[in-house]
Amino acid sequence: METIQDSVGLRGTNRPQDVKLVQKLLSQNGFPQLQIDGICGNNTTKAIITYQKHFYQHPDGLVSPGKKTLTQLTSGQRSGLPRAHGSTGSNPNGARKNPMTMYPSYQVLKLMMQYEQLHTLPYDDHTSTTISNWTAGATIGYGHWISRQSEFDQFKDGISEQAAETLFSQDLKKFVDAVRKYVKVSLTQNEFDALVMLAFNIGTRDNLNHKGLYYSTALKVINGESPEDLDRAWMQFVYSRGVRMKGLVNRRKSELNVYHKGIYIKL
Image (cartoon, rainbow, N blue to C red; front, side, top):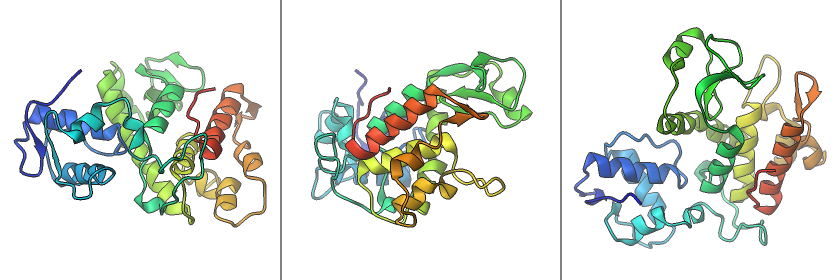
């Protein structure tokens, strides 16, 4: 298992390789938008302090070899960071928080990556076949849409797994921001996670076609603006080009398991 050689954070030694490892661990523990660049700047320090607040009354903003913060980051209990104080399958209604203060949990990031699956070469999202020329459905990594020819030229020879993870973290930010912006009520961690997962798959806001999370009945139900049934509204998003897709049905059911029960399992 990888570990750091010296301290990282406030007044730390901040060796670039150590900083990169800590940034990678933080990105897996509720801070997917954190850039992994080996530079211990304000965002990295802030993430360390925010992480430490879950188990330290007075965070010191420092990650040191053999100390509690590093142990927590590298342990198998990484999912404990943003979990809403017992918001699990046996107690899904954990502490509610303002969405503006929330981050996706490690469990949901892992689940989303399982659904998207790693593709190191460009492929057509509509046919799942590897492609050598740009098409409207060109995709790479963990569901990253290649929007234009110039971007395709950048990815045509493929990417590494680490680059795919970085790209996924960068892509995720706008979906996290959308949930924070559009949801008007407090959420448990599992509810927040499920909405991020849904937004990632259906989009955030397409004003031209009135599609995406912003225009969804599911969002209106959650915000108390519609009397419709939430599960029925959620399950509207199971069609691709007019065809009901079993994969999308399973994905929606998986998201609802996260939302209602805090169960993070791919179906």
